[in-house]
Length: 98
Image (cartoon, rainbow, N blue to C red; front, side, top):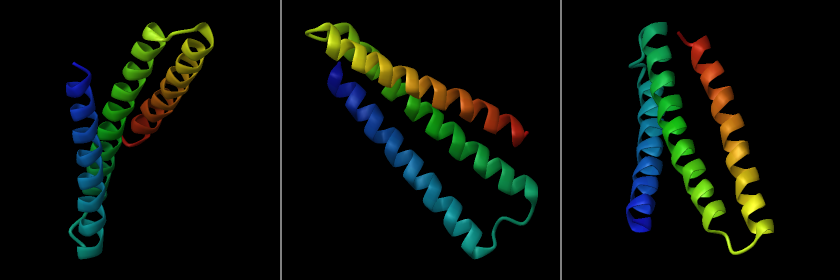
């Protein structure tokens, strides 16, 4: 099960990186002809990043649950809370592109 999560995280990272490269190349090539194209590409990139953050957050929640001691569990919970804050800000940012 952990192996599947790591694979999904790696795939998400690859997807985010590929989308960012595609976006940069499209900008360089002048392929983004309208603001609508630009907004759509940015939304897609933000959404991919959000999905990655959700996977990482879920992983830290599981690590907190399985932690050997309270101190370690609390660190994982703090990290998960930080990812939740980042995801909230991303939601607000994405609303600005609609």
